[in-house]
Image (cartoon, rainbow, N blue to C red; front, side, top):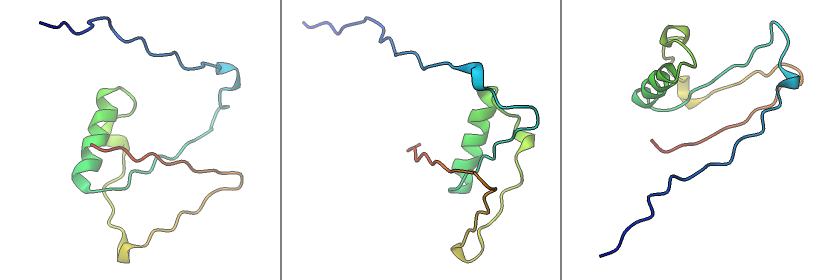
Length: 85
């Protein structure tokens, strides 16, 4: 008979430097791109995590002709995360 280690895994803490908090009026734009059911699932997950109300999201918008153009503001950058559901 073998026993698995039941010691809880301790994750490293993330650096928390709040000295550079964004100023008043600063914004960030979240873009969800994927299958409608996966987008709805993610919206509800973010709501359950108390990050944002579901009503704050726009209605789902079809991407015409499989084309998407993003227009960044000066000094904007972009990052992307692909996560399997």
